[in-house]
View 1 (cartoon, rainbow, N blue to C red):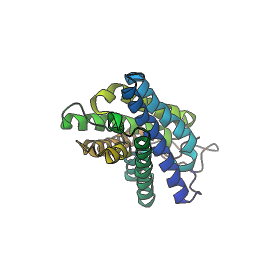
View 2 (view 1 turned 90 degrees about the horizontal axis):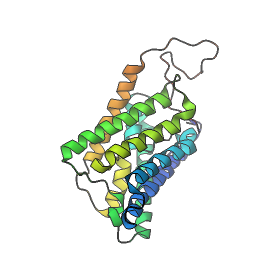
View 3 (view 1 turned 90 degrees about the vertical axis):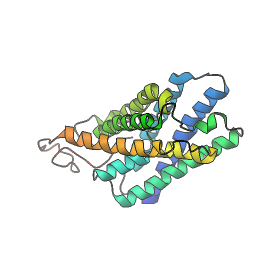
Length: 245
């Protein structure tokens, strides 16, 4: 992440990435519904994983590529991100997701698949547990590649896109595998479908916090490096959130 960039520029990158996520991911859900399962569950999961991967590559060096309020808040709770910036990022992510849903409504005026709204197919309590676990897995991986100098940073986008696609494969049929309040908010607002929406806020927020603190616990302490040490690296091996492009 380039901290020399003005906050509004970094927030704009987050809005664009969230727009891309909802337009591509929810667009895939709509196309799958309209064209009689042309993509299938695997295809839709692949779209979600790929759009996250490419947007991390495209915006990671600009904004850190959170693309997700639960990720932003988890970074803030673990003191990798400032509360002021978190407010701007969250607003940008919600705005980008909502604009994407509006564009999808403009194309698909009859709102097939409710524009990709996430609605659980199990009881709300079970869906909450699923979303929390899915997001915890995602955040654990993000913490590894974004905050620990011992992880291979060059593969960050592949790792993050991979876990999103994997979560979607086994969780998509259960909850829609949102893991992201912004991804759920945009389509819900535009389609007017709020059934069990709390699941997609509380589950990801709790799960991301658990995943972030779990990685902090698992990481432990790293002995200080010598001449090759990153000047921004801390003594425990942590570093400010910085995903490579």
